[in-house]
Amino acid sequence: MTHDLTVRAPAKINLHLGVGRVRDDGFHPLDTVYQALSIYDDLSVGSAAEVRLSISVADYIDRAGVPDGEDNLVSRAVAAMARHHGRELPVDLVLDKSIPLAGGMAGGSADAAAALLAVDRWHDLRTSDDALLALAAGLGSDVPFSLVGGTARGVGRGEVVVPVEDTGAWWWVAVPSTEGLSTPTVYRHFDTMRPDAPEVPASAEPLLEALASGEPVRLARALHNDLQEPAIDLRPELGDLIVRGEAEGALRGIVSGSGPTVVFLCDSADGATATGRALAGAGHDVVLTATGPVAGVHVVS
Ligand code: C5P
Image: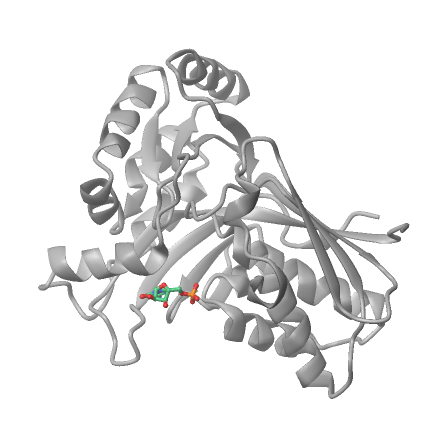
């Protein structure tokens, strides 16, 4: 089977993740700043008589951890598009995953956003941007950001996304864990640890000011994640990893989203390579170097 169209979807991290008290609908109000990083899942599309999905993964990803068939967010995204347009949308899809699973880097959300764009282009549906964003929000809180990419502020439950000017070229080292951590578990643990959490989440303004300075040291100081404490309480080794990466030259380590991936901001490409090598030498099997911001989901061929 030849595939004529490939859509690439980036991982995300949260430079700021302010979390407020849980809402009546079970979601938490957020004030967050997302950044898209150069770690990608690719989704290739070809013709088929029905919707088909096959999955391959990078050598550091456990294939068994990726849901198959209708449980995969790719399939759910195609179904949502089909409902929206009131017609069947047969496609053969091949998903090639490099974004760590259940790692707080929105891999599943990236795949869903890729599927929306891929099916739209393949069937020449010309879905409006507003409709794509609404469909994305219905699939998950992070999915609209995966469409938008770059650096963006997210409010609501994270699904209301406003792009932010970011002229920096930031260098990161990402260290995934062998075992994922479920997002709802970390949010529930936040509720237990922070029963006094304010209704209005911590503002992203200080982070945005640091970002505008273009200075890695200022950005490092401003990084903030309210889910870090609960994630480390559930996985104490993450705290040790942050200390180790900072001792190996990173400006700052922080849990990515709900974790357990830890990302380190470095002062340069060389700095990221050196920190990455040191962490790999210290026994971390999977160490990824990445830059941000990069584009949201886009067609590559
Ligand atoms: O929206 P999404 O499907 O990605 O959310 C997964 C889970 O993460 C939700 O069911 C909820 O438990 C938690 N969540 C939350 N508040 C948010 C986003 C996600 O509590 N703003």
